[in-house]
Amino acid sequence: MKEGESKRVNLGVLLLLILALITIGVIGYSAIEGWNLLDALYMVIITLATVGFREVHPLSPAGMIFTILLIIFGLITLYYVIRTVGEYILENKLEETLKYKKMEKTLRDLKDHYIICGFGRVGRQVVQELSQEHADFVVVEKNPALAEACERLGYTCLVGDATEETALKQAGILNAKGLIICLGQDSDAVLTVVTAHSMNKDLFIVARANGENTAGKLLKIGANRVVSPQHIGGFRMASFALNPTVADFIDDLQDLSNQEVRIDDIIVSAHSLVAGHTIAERLSNRTYGATVLAIHKQDGEAIINPTGDVLIESGDRLILLGTKAKLDAVLKLLGTNK
Image 1 (cartoon, rainbow, N blue to C red):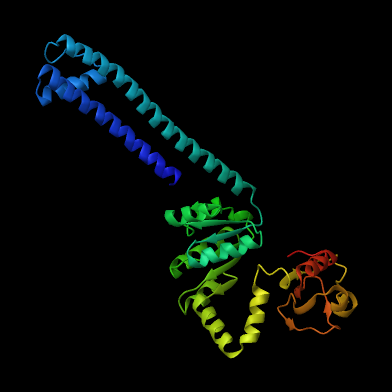
Image 2: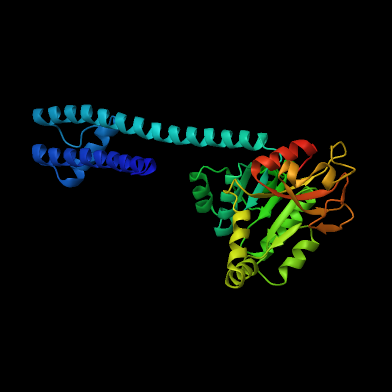
């Protein structure tokens, strides 16, 4: 049984204790004094409430003794009920306050993190992938039930509407590295892109598009990349059917849990040791064990599968293939930023 359920059961037991005490009092006065139900109930209520009213009818010695016992047991029971309810309220209030303070501190300390909008099926998968990569992120989810499920998994989650500036600001959009929009409605995705882009123009935005005509709109209003789950799913199914071996190899490369083979992108800085030199001179696969798959120039030109005589310049984005250890070594060599 969960903690919250046990507390609800205890509160129910407390209510039963009070009802049992009232029932015993009514039966006692009816049996000892011969009073009717209303008179007995009235006498029990004013006795337990200690309001100081006179008795409904004169009490016999047995009725006086019964009243004394009823007051004693009533005070003990009511004290226990009030204390338990008070502890329950204070404990939940304190727990909620501490939880809020902890989340505030976490969000305040976040920098260069990712914001995931939505914790549905797509959002949950994105969170799992980022978690495997040990990336810093925060989830913004409007549905309280989904937000609670996200928190139970140990992720930082804000209950809020990602289309509103308040929720995005609270998630640290001004210091964020990227925004991943996994919302189910295209209208919400469009509004979120517009809002986020207006708050942080340097933010890298990846948006989900459900409709066929939505992708172009999202790119025009500020999204850097747009993903259509239907198109990707259809492409992957066709790839497995036509070229299963190649598709398996691509899956191995894309598997973030696979630490042996990885694809990474690296930007060459001005002080890098390879800036101004060819691939063969400073970034040979034989020397460092990393293969340059592509070079994206600052003017937009993309060189796919570059040869060894291609010149590497400051600001170039290199797409590298290799093991994690090899890529980390190259990253140190280049003195670059991702």
